[in-house]
Image (cartoon, rainbow, N blue to C red; front, side, top):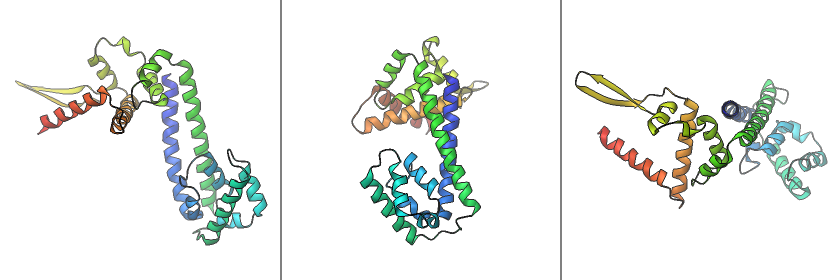
Length: 241
C-alpha cells in the first residue's frame, strides 16, 4: 500500500512539474490555444495540443482531417468536433507564436505532454492498486467523513497503515511527526514547533484531508473533526500571543 502511495506522490509531483513546463512552452508556440476550452487540461485538451502544437501546423491541415482527429477523442461527436475545429482555426489565424513550427520548443512541448499523460496513468494505476489492497471497512469509515473522498481515504490508509496498532494518539502523532518538540533548560520547559520526525508524505496527506473537511463544512457539511481542529488552532494562536 505505502509503495503505491509513494508512486502516486511522485507521479503527482511530475504532473505538476510538466504542467508548468507545458504552459511555458505554449506561451511560445501557440498561446491562443489555451482559450480553446474553459478548463485547459485533461486528456482531450492535451491530445489536441500534442497534435497541433503550432498554429502553422493547424492551418496546413485540411479542415476535414482536423474534424476526423477530434471525433476520435473521447466523448466528442460530429457536431462538437466541428465546433472545436472552427474555434481552433479562428485561434490559429490570430495567433502570434514566438517560435517557428520546427523549433526545439515544439519538441519540449510534446515531451511535457507525454510526461503528463504518463504521470496521469501512473496516478490512476497506483490508486487502483491501493483500492484492491485497502481494508474495505477502513475505507468506508474514512469516506463517511464529510469532505474525504475515496482517493484521499486510500492515501491515508496507505500511508498510516492500521492505526489500531497505536496505543494512544500521541504515538500516532509521533509516527506522522506532528508531535511538539519540547525544550528543557533548568526549570524552563517550552513546547516548540512540531518535530517533523515522521513521514512527510503522511503529514501532507493529513493536511490535505483536514483542508477538505474544512471546505466541506463551509458548504454545509459540518463535522466534529473540523470543529476540534478550529478549536485547537484558536487555542494555539492565543498561546502564541
